[in-house]
Image (cartoon, rainbow, N blue to C red; front, top):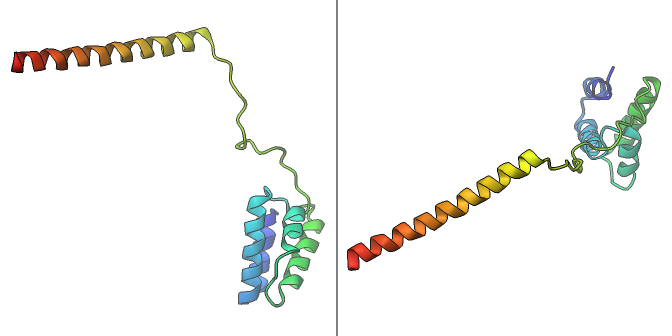
Length: 122
């Protein structure tokens, strides 16, 4: 069973507004901690929980520990900073050709505008 499966079970068992709000807070913290319940619960310690919310969190922690889901570690965030890639000669050459053709196109456009204005006013 996954951590979110345990949370879904708790939502079905404790369908009070306070329990739902508490579990919503837990899920929000899980998003910030990459699904690490231990860190999420630690972040919730400083926040005020709804009435009866502490019992729901305690039950969640107990079930997560029983299923070995309490302190999950998925490693570093792959979307944080992508690793830099080396620039090969082919890619650099294509970039240089694109830059040269862009400058040439702008230059030809300027010449065409100047010649057009000369034809109109000349």
